[in-house]
Image (tube, rainbow, N blue to C red; front, side, top):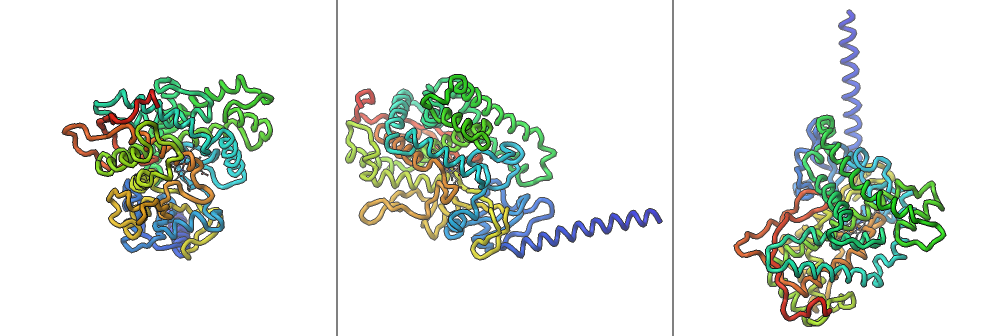
Length: 500
Ligand code: HEM
């Protein structure tokens, strides 16, 4: 009798659990949009694959529509077309989807308290951090034309370095990351690092490894297949260790600043301003917050910019006619005796269109992840508070209805009949709305000055006999091209950098 009772208790308990899960699943399904049915336990993981943005677009094409819901460990909603993505960015003045995605990586491995800028939820703390960081950096010239001199200085350093590498097959990704990185370290830490400075190399290297580790299969599994987590503890610990390594290098720099910091003295750099704010408002501005703010500024600025430039060089190696036209335009408008500057921007439509086209094709941040801050709607479907929403900007940038023959590299799609640049609303490399990229204006200045200066001075070609490198991005936090060597040839008709 005891056995029967025991069996009945277990049977009824299991039944209740199954019915409850079924109820919530149905309720969730009835609230939100259509999507593929997941398999038990593993959800839709098998449908998605590692190239998630491509498969996501395919789901829309397969009839699930532009707002598609599915289980990926946790419920997700995918926004695939321009109207839906715009609604995510702008609904209720951008407030409804202003939080970041709940994720295993953020909550368990990186930033459990969700501090800082990028990974934090929409909150008063985040509002205050973003406002303070932006206004302080602007005080140091961030994103303003007055900052041009600092970027140009770094560009000139890079050009001298690249010249030394000419006529031999070279992979430029490391030197580019160091160059764009030194602009942000200068701004934040107030110090100028040489490319071979140990501390700087440690920061860049730790950051790079964090970003690329993010794309590893073990990370993808832990994120989207919760039952795999107990088996992948070693990978989880590796990721934690990588973050700890990065934090400790940055922290030692902050500690250096702290030693000589005085609230009564003129701030020397961004860290000084933050330390002063910590004295003024200790409940919101803490050392821990500062660490995550710095991680976000380094992480947000380095790879995104250098990967975009590397993809642009790759596309131009594959399209020498475009490269020649860009150089010709630079020679006609700027001339051989000086480097391009921001004032030239509006007079270089083909060069600017080439940057836009590279940003579209590269889509270095292919998916922008947000989370609903309130119960709301998306394209008419109810979206409960806390639902993760992924904007497939890669899908938008490759939408054939918006960009005919989307895989073709064609800068002229960003020009009108008069040869003027068109700013397409369908190009969203920096996101939009409340969580729009904080470094957008600085990034645009950097992309223009780096790209136009490199094209002004050098020709990039495939090394003799080399096969065309793959255009397919490597998995990671940001899309990056596979390492590829190029032959760099200096144009003879331009002045030497020492004379510029
Ligand atoms: C080509 C270069 C860059 C690209 C493609 C890029 C792209 C993005 C994207 C797509 C987002 C998410 C936007 C959203 O949710 O709507 C973002 C956020 C962010 N970016 Fe950038 N970014 C670039 C450069 C920079 C630079 C130079 C900095 C800083 C110096 C920076 C700092 C940030 C920060 C702090 C955030 C988080 C903003 C928030 O959550 O409120 N980014 N970026």
